[in-house]
Image (cartoon, rainbow, N blue to C red; front, top):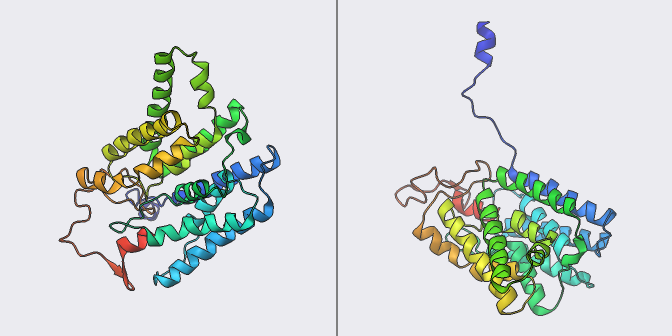
Length: 304
């Protein structure tokens, strides 16, 4: 009995799987479903080039920045998201998008934190240059498929402790769409039809919820979700431009450092997912950062 009690240590922390593994599994499932059942307009060769370019770019960045180890999980997430959303007839464009997405993490940074969501930046650049497009109708209007995306995404963001920003964005975005319809006297079928988009759910559950490019504190994330929703609706109905959430997110990305300064929270760590509320000493300048090789621990986490 004594030996059994010694082996059982209830106070020992339970090791959790990296949330990125759930993201990779979910996005892979969605992509496979789209290829087999929905016949997505994306070739296996384009998928291979997108994934390969993302992995190679991450590896090159790892070597150039002297990181202690190569981690393919984050670039896989970005590449799978590009495969799901970006449509192009040019394989070079697919490779360029993957390169921009991953390289931006190493180049466009602020306070050891990459500024833009990699997938969001790559998509906006491709759309702005006219190199590709996004087809919201590729998902169809099947309610249960949207529910499947929501369930998989909910699992992901809950594991990543960022469910708040996803739910806040969807609440604000859908609420404002319904309010606008009521104000204009439109039937509610119009906003309900507008939100029946797999691309919107992927944006909400897999893009705006990125722990590395959202504010550190919960209050900051909720405010950020509101601002992005307002910007997305302005782009969509004020500028009459499609893909409002993508443009809204890229336009609001520069506000994250300001929100982090005004509403500080603990920096996100993939190995210990948290909501950002537990630490009172975030980025304490008195405490010297831990170092491995030539980069601090905070700097290494920036590229993941």
